[in-house]
Image 1 (cartoon, helix red, strand yellow):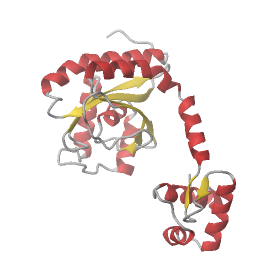
Image 2: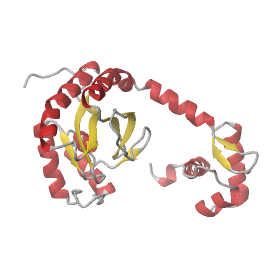
Image 3: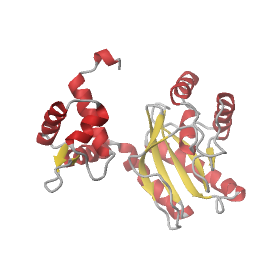
Amino acid sequence: MERENMVKSVSRALDIITLVSLKKGGLGVTEIANQIDINKSSVYRILSTLVKYGYIEQDEDTARYKLGYKLLEISSKLLESIDLRVEAKPFLLQLEKETNEVIHLVVYDQGEVVYIEKLEGNETLRMHSKVGKRASVHCTSVGKAILAYLPTSIVLDILERKGLAMQTDKTITTKDDFIEELAKVKQMGYALDLEENEYGITCIAVPIFDHLGKVVAAVSVSGPTLRMTEERLTHLQSLMLHTGKQISARLGYELRSS
């Protein structure tokens, strides 16, 4: 949306909500005003309105402002309305049972992936991912699994806007190499993240398609590189491809014979 088409007061309110969300203990009026360059009286009026509608609440002891439960209510309704999570859950649970590793389900949104489901598995693994968090598409297996099935024009636009930031020294950081990687992903039907996003973490992901044949999500298995050996990844390929097809079928995707 072009800036001239935006309603300034709404934009400022959303900026304040975003800013407050980044501080666990909340923020005061002066802190908010200093960070977004709005006078304190304007910030106070916006906060008062947000408090009235439940999007922001004020701590009685500290007088600082924090996110309100209205946002959680809306988020819950959004998650409940995503049939993908409901349809995919049984297959994700089965995948977790068979692998004992971390399972992720993500959707694509505005050049990034958003985690909408995470199963922890039975093995110990610390990852930065969590439900609701966004991640880059170029260095994650789920991101690559989705991008491989998007139009080239969209992929190039994403790379232009988001870039190919180096997360580790194994991240693909040149456009030509990344386009070549996506061609391989599409040919194989699955994508790999070989410590490209987090050191010590290897992932394998497959795309999920809807009834129109459009890629709408991706599912992955993540584990420590020590366990996710080349031999194990080879074993997981057929399991992941099968899982992707099962979930896609539940979304109405007509599986084509190869």
